[in-house]
Image (cartoon, rainbow, N blue to C red; front, top):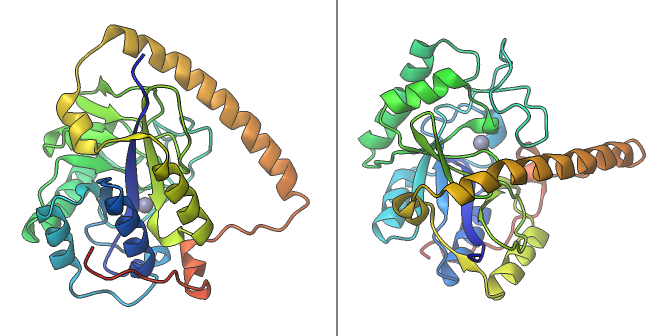
Length: 283
Ligand SMILES: [Zn+2]
């Protein structure tokens, strides 16, 4: 059995993200020779992601990181504008939580394709070319997948599985974790919401990276994917176990929240949180 491999993914990359936290995470990963997947929102219109004044050097910085080989990039939606879909999301229950808002789910195919292409055009106008995608709020439907194929996307960072798999003409590289955890085998994507990284989370990542763990990159996994029947047989077993565990965890959390105040840090509240000390801007 091959050892577990880990991909780090940094979500909600925009000109007005919390740059101090962005550099803290990126510098830490780069020090350990880990190349994360950055999810760039091409034209952010979600006020919850605005943590500071937009940096006019944003696109230059993104190109510099790509050209230095320090990051892979995915298109993360188009405007990150979340609506309440009329139809249920394809991935509504795959992470064991109810997804109520989506940028894509429920919209007609031509509209979804137009949104994807507008986002793609913004990236390309700024010299960034990628065929990787992940949707805001993990939420998309069959029309999104069809539109992704039509727009030339090849791989998606999402869904719950132990190993990457092909579906609907796209490669799915699963995303199962939000905090690093040592696993036995499989390919695990650890999703970090850049604006919400706390010093404690940073410490956890640092401790994880000091262990003998096999980190890889999204691009490497996508480039070396091979169909393997035994691995594909393990995927549904893992998914069932994962959803069962998440369901129990959610129930415990719900009960606990009935008696304790919510202390989660949202991006909208990030202004009020002491910023991490930003490392040098250039990694
Ligand atoms: Zn997002």
